[in-house]
Image 1 (cartoon, one colour):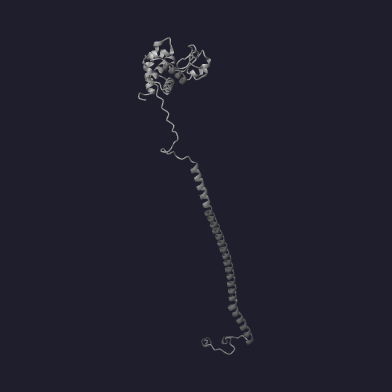
Image 2 (spheres, rainbow, N blue to C red; image 1 turned 90 degrees about the vertical axis):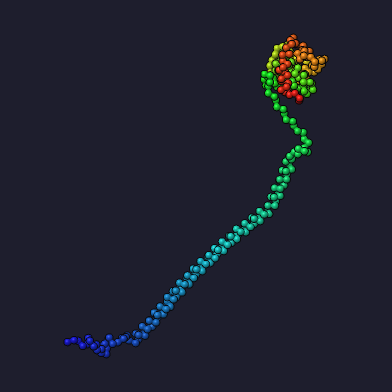
Length: 283
């Protein structure tokens, strides 16, 4: 037989399944209060925590904001100080610039005043130095030293204003007497104290023209000078009557009184060529 009780449950008073709450009334009030407190804790406890947390966060944020503000203020102050220093430096540079410009202008003016002005070719009154003539190259088989001595003879004769013919006679005479070298004398040791190019032993004859101090031609020191010796010879030549119309060898012999009067003639063509090289015709 089936159990009808299981199919149609019949509850009786006092059966636990019929009661929704079997807690006594006093216990129920206590439980209610506990439930209310728990509810309040649920409502208010987390809220306080949240409020406290929010308050802490706000405080931290506030402190961070303050720190950031102070840092920004310090940076701004530093930037302001840098800008102020830069402005002051710029101002000092601008103030110093006029003085530097004035000093620079004064220095330039002093330099310009002390500098030597360029000579104006139209108004310059300073004497101009004549260019030194170029020495001619040796001709007629002469050496450099011989050519220089010939130039000294020609230059001295031109300073004296003698005719060209006298120049040729003088050069030819020196060619015969000394081969155009400035001789000292072995008989006169004094003559060797002066510039010379050779030493001869023909009595006390010295210089280009082999003039003898003992014959009254002049002091040894002066006769060793080519220019002085030339003046002595040309001055004596000009004292010979009609020397301009004489043969070269006769004019030279009239001055020199040589033991070989005809030997001067052989040097005429060479002497003429040398004079022409030093003083071309027309000069």
